[in-house]
Length: 401
Ligand SMILES: C[S@@+](CC[C@H](N)C(=O)[O-])C[C@H]1O[C@@H](n2cnc3c(N)ncnc32)[C@H](O)[C@@H]1O
Image 1 (tube, rainbow, N blue to C red):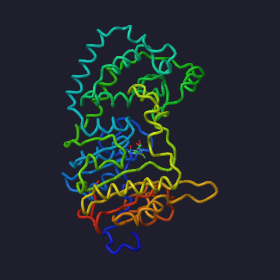
Image 2: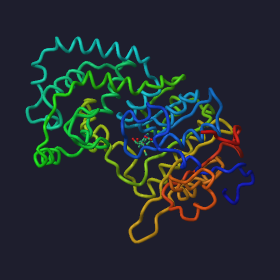
Image 3: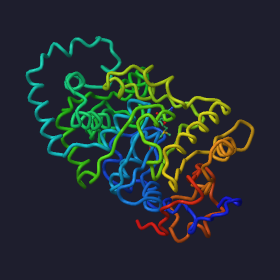
Image 4: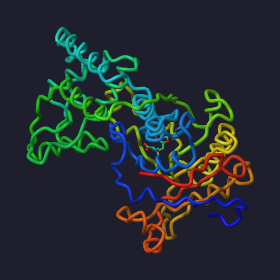
């Protein structure tokens, strides 16, 4: 608890989510991997403690949509925003999904039409286009077709996001195909075309003619195995500092977010295969995001973000910002969340409730969390917890898992 806070939170915020499996949560969460994503267990904690059903929960940097999806699962209204078109697509698919049968019917319709699709279309692709080394020609022709016909409708966005999640990944250990559509390669990021070429040659990898419709159908069944969230949300693709244009002031009960850090993550370059499927150029992603600032520019950016959150939060609403410590050459790591608060505190009326260290070993038992294991913790992430007004209007004492 921050020393100067005259309104201590009871019970204090502790990272009890660390004792819960990282894979905890609704099957929609792992639909597609995304760099710097956080696990849904942390959302459950904040949603349960600081909101009631029907409240609006926002993530202004939603990535693959973990915060708004968990909010919808827990019958709150999840609101996503991310400037990266890939993140926007994934977030939108999850917070506003179609019924499973609607998605499957649409996929069947697309499959029927593919049979009549002019095969010559696949030859329109540049013969040396780098995606040719990622997929077997049959798989590629289906992907080219889908890429050209999928629309912006709810079911098409869901199908597109599902395909983005299975677009590339590892074969099974025995060398057979897996859920993925590519030659054997990592799922989390796209290796460079040159690397893939060498890797395929050195390991004598075979290209398998994998059926996109079949794999997508199976994947949709898997994603809906627990049904869809009862509540739908909304997704936006704006600079986080511009959200007042689409969200009313004083309307958000909770924000949980991990803003960009002081590290350059090339979301475009490292996702070039996914961007190809979305028909986007790398430049439409890299160069637009606020993840490459130096420290002063970053702090200025975060002050503006915090001012924006102050405007959007309801009185008594809470914002929890996950901000990692940052390594510094020749120095101990920088406590970036403390630096952000230092820069923001004289320029916002939000109150600091706590800076929680999210650094307890994942194997710890809940009961042991703040006794034996605490001293051994290594600080990695911290959560800056802010409130509009002096204390949260909703603060349920316990969270059940
Ligand atoms: C650390 S990631 C968030 C990951 C997310 N918590 C998840 O679990 O997937 C930070 C996100 O901020 C987005 N971003 C960077 N600058 C932005 C800006 N000015 N406005 C909105 N989003 C931005 C990036 O595209 C990235 O998705």
